[in-house]
Length: 46
Image 1 (cartoon, rainbow, N blue to C red):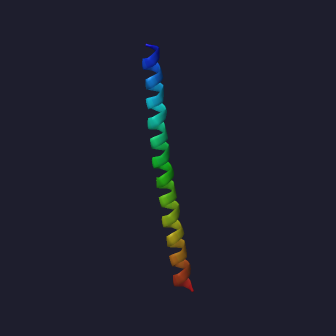
Image 2 (cartoon, rainbow, N blue to C red; image 1 turned 135 degrees about the horizontal axis):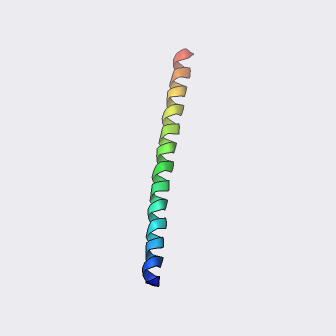
Image 3 (tube, one colour; image 1 turned 45 degrees about the vertical axis):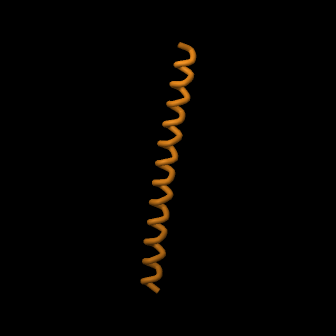
């Protein structure tokens, strides 16, 4: 019982870490895309 709860908690933290990484990479990709669009607009304006 005790071992089961421990492994469940580890699995939960593991999945949470993966989800956190996924959202962080998605946010970084969105920032990169927005920066690229902004730099493209600046290049077009100049």
